[in-house]
Length: 368
Ligand SMILES: [Ca+2]
Ligand SMILES: [Ca+2]
Image (tube, rainbow, N blue to C red; front, side, top):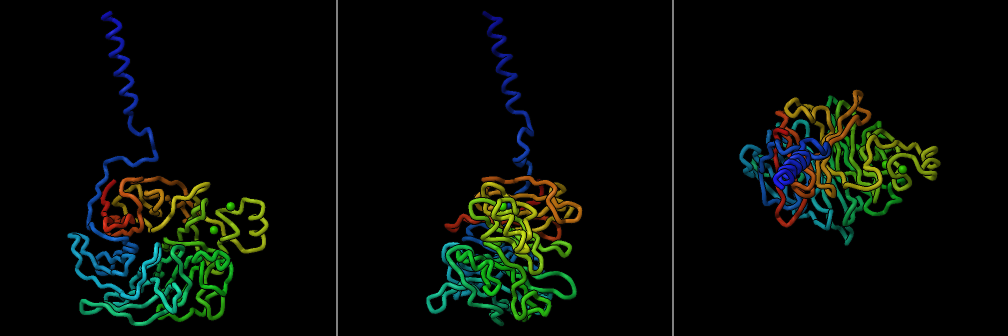
């Protein structure tokens, strides 16, 4: 009897130790990271960017723009654009600072508003000076909007001839994505004063690329422009955006691999994504590039947030930046839906949630 009891103890011990073996799931982050809450009580923060003044600039869906001290979480300035109309996914969206922001205070925002009963989208150049902000110039307006599929991220390319890029969603009129005279479902490209660059593909049009559904992430690395795009029920995408290329929507989801897609792609100048979520969607959103040595696992990765999957995806770029070599998922279901990301020059990563009810947070990740 005593022998059986001893065997039972040994059996139980060996089983519990094999169940707790570390590293059994490579798709889950290890709990050794350092995450600090910078700010709580936010309501649908949409854009967070690391400002040239070393503060985090943030938009929230309802129309508020804030400047936050990342060390203390103190809001050192905020103002609300009264014209913004939040409507489900619509409202205040992307923001970017002028390259010479520290001298001229200029920045750009994109948001949804109402005019003559229509729900629309516009991009406005703003100026921050003497502790306040005011609109300078509307660069484009009357872009169709809807309660979802409105984009919109803004980005200014680096270098001596910077251009301003803006993503637009199809505003639920999917056939507009293939219509190059519509501003829906596009990447648009402007000079920083809002004028149309002479080398845009369509004369007097800001359209740069077309066939997009809803792009909510945008980053440029070494001159390559990457965008994340929501798929319908399959195939969220990461694309490399090029001049005058067709990104397929609504005729193509992901790569050109179905019979009707192959025939469309053979004649329609379609550029396939470099990454796709495959047979389901995870709702891809904010996108940034990690070039720092501070968090070695993320070096040379596109860091992409997801709403539905409630995670951060680290997509390791290959040597020429034209493909994804590997991917890893972090923080799944830990903070809820994740909307946007920015990275400080020191290599700290900032992310914001998108859960609503004034319960959203701005988090700092300094270690994995
Ligand atoms: Ca596509
Ligand atoms: Ca496909």
